Image (tube, rainbow, N blue to C red; front, side):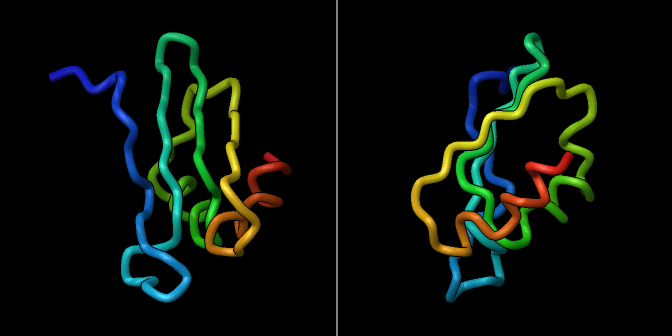
Length: 81
C-alpha cells in the first residue's frame, strides 16, 4: 500500500496527556524531498531525530496552529537545523 498522500502522526498527545507525546502531524513528499510539519511540540525535535525523519529532506515547512508549548516547544530547535 502506498502511503505517499497520508498525514502521519509523530505524536498525538497534549500538554496534559504526555503519554502520547505532544502535538505534531507530518507529511513527507518523497518526490520533492520535503516535509510538512503541522505543529512542533516540546518533544517533537527529539522524536524526529530519533526516527531519522529528515533523511533526504531538503525543504521543511512548519505550520503552527497556535502558540501553546505543546504545539511550538521544539520550534527553535527545528529552525536551527
